[in-house]
Length: 399
Image 1: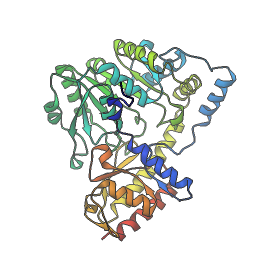
Image 2: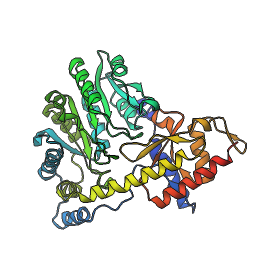
Image 3: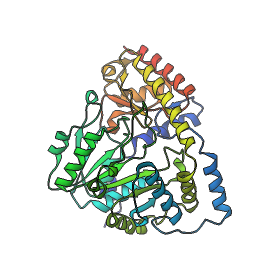
Image 4: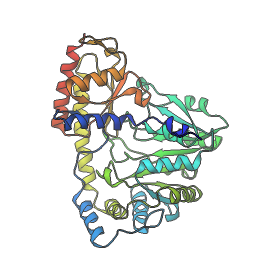
């Protein structure tokens, strides 16, 4: 048999967000002052009490294997947080802890999807969902969501995508990349479809704490017993607690699904980092005021960056309700020139902006949203101001 890479692996596209962030970091390493709006990583320091917990874990010898599904301590802390915040009741055998929410989602797709099973994904969508479905042997079915509708799908559009092969629907609430939040009526209608047509809802709620303008995040399993039984709830500590590098995420759901995910994880990664599990348990049970302080800072940044974008002729954006991203409409930039180079799509715009204005953002085609670019405002107001000044100057040079 000839040497080579598997067909399955060759078909997997690299993460566009990580690729753009890596390119920006390489330019910085070469001495270029790059303003980065690409990566979805809070710039805040990890809370002191969490950092102390990591040190404490090492001093206490928490350096061994733990149960595959996570320690009793961290699963109890997750169950406590879900009960405290949403009134949700999960037993410990209904919770699995993994190496970040991204790993949790990967394991969920591997666990639920048979070959050619269909997973419905609203677009614009996070770059990794379609690739994860492909890696599990499934087929992504996309529901296009328009900016004028708040990037939210209609229930009628979702229903048209359902077939006998539909296994799951991916709900991202609040959303990456566009920051929208689903209203209760739409969520209840989605649950009704899941019950009637028998499919799971994978509810990615990693940005649950980052909600603005007085809006309320509704955790899907709270809506009814049927919502609970049809939902695999995904969360983690990365975004709300500024703990991205600690790589702790979780899923909560029906015991049979969690047991199967645990079996799969036992043969892939085993348990996540033992010391980080302790730190996550502390994060979930500590005073939560620092989370609110970070949320308030994100809201200030969001309002500023949206105001600046909408003040630049030819650019526009919605003011998002959650997460820390904004989708910038660049359709009026298509066909313009920077020097002798024609901008044919959002990728051209993003690359020219990076190379000439030293501002990094992610082109919309990565999120199946051509004509847009995603900016993360998980950076300081000072850098946002500097980046917006550069963006404005760049657009003025286009002809």
